[in-house]
Image (cartoon, rainbow, N blue to C red; front, side):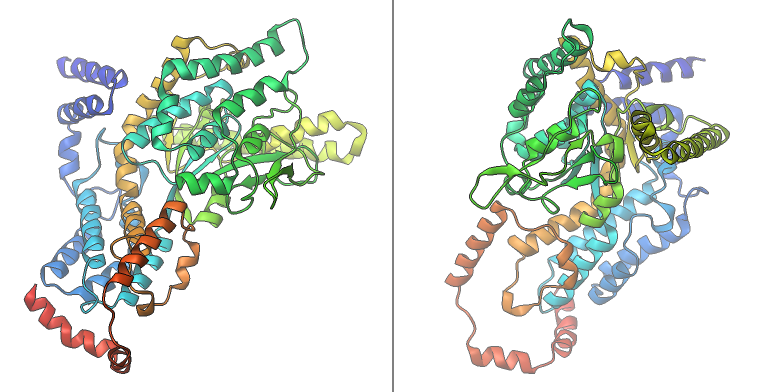
Length: 548
């Protein structure tokens, strides 16, 4: 009885923690008392193939100790992916508050150390071309992480707390998508540097913006004037999102933001706007379109910058509305464009939050029944939509409403890591009402506190991909960049993001430095080309091993 009371007290302290460091200390104490710490130290469990992970861990350690560089490269090439032996299963990260099985953590750390080890080996030990081929290919195979921000009215400021936590821990992915309210936060994050984002973390500054936004909804729904004042929303977005295109935003921050918009007309498909698909479209215009809730705000025409630097309509015959209606979490499109396969979801959409099981608290029977109910609902909507569409233009409003409801129900609202608030907002009027300063502070604080339990999971699941991103950055613009005459750019590098303005500056500085260093004579270069590189590697390899 005393133990259970203590655990409840610790859980309460975790829920009310003011910082991640405070949450961490309480979480570790909770794990020690609950027995989760002992569970972490034991390899055996039916939830993953611990014998395979142990075997591979011992093999990697042995290869590094013996300086078997080619064997190490082969072993990593053979099986570097995030779900080796089932170690990426979400249930393994729910048992303990902080971390998972120590075997998994050690395996991830060993791969991380091995990648750095191989990257920094001299060219006479492992050929530069072989290293580049491996890292570019492994980066594509392992994949990248993306943060997806859902729609949710004024609850979108919850996302700001989530972003703040991830940014402070160095875990904010470079690929970020947003729809509706999430598009506003994605637009802010994608167009501001880390220093500039501190402005939006101040409660007084954010309250000013939220108050102006809430006043729009209050006048529309509860005021005497039923007319929609779009100008207020435009001014709000103009204050929070600077006047720049997707390409200019990427050049400034290096973050690859994407914003979803839905078509206002039938027979059209939703679009994912970003620096790849629509580099010249203004981010502000895309955010405005994604926030245009049907029936509340009129459809929006996108604007783009032409070759003369002037603003002009983008697809002038088309108008766009709220992106969450068609594709709240565009995981498939992000995967195709950015090679992402791991998704962190910040979810405040009231349509989806009741169906997301974040902590595995529901039994398998309840989850199955819930999934069955959602499936039946989708099929019923399909039936009704088919009946309505047969009538053609007789019921245009009802037809549009049914298509909207079907689109909302036919989406997948979960990811690999789901960050969902503990509260549930079921009152639609509350979503469109004025927020007090205390409400806003609590909303942002809820985003931070809800993200704390997921930080260590995100850190472990993204550590290898972050390491490979860092190494490739060093190969492209940093201290590991080889001479352009020594290698050919691998085909797998085509999926890499283009260099930013700062990357190009670093590249120019590197070229200046390389020009100052003395270069080999053409005769020596020709001699080097005639000798087979593999035989040189074999001859130099043992000597290098002995020297090491």
